[in-house]
Length: 130
Image 1 (cartoon, helix red, strand yellow):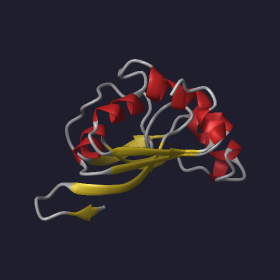
Image 2 (spheres, one colour):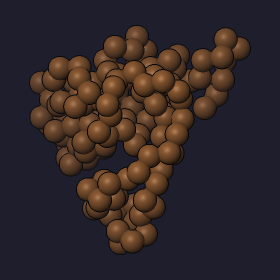
Image 3 (cartoon, helix red, strand yellow):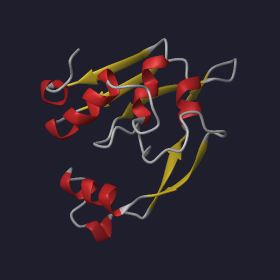
């Protein structure tokens, strides 16, 4: 993060995962949580995704915990860049852009931000209506 004089961070880049979570956001209970940072357990499905995506060779190498940034912190950022590569993210991108803004798709809340920019390749955009 870079901090601006007024205290709000600029979040240079986040990513949207296969389950439509920005960064390590999945199974969010609320779109607007209190606080800014914290640990999160990485479930087996998300750990397996890390192996499929090539970040790790085996599931045993994937850490069981990660640090996350809360949606309230992301949405409080002055500007947000979202990077989404690959066909395996097409459903998540479609839900993020075209579905309702809801906790089942935390990344959908990024549509509320006045200066959020999505960078996605054709494969990731293949199922989006926009």
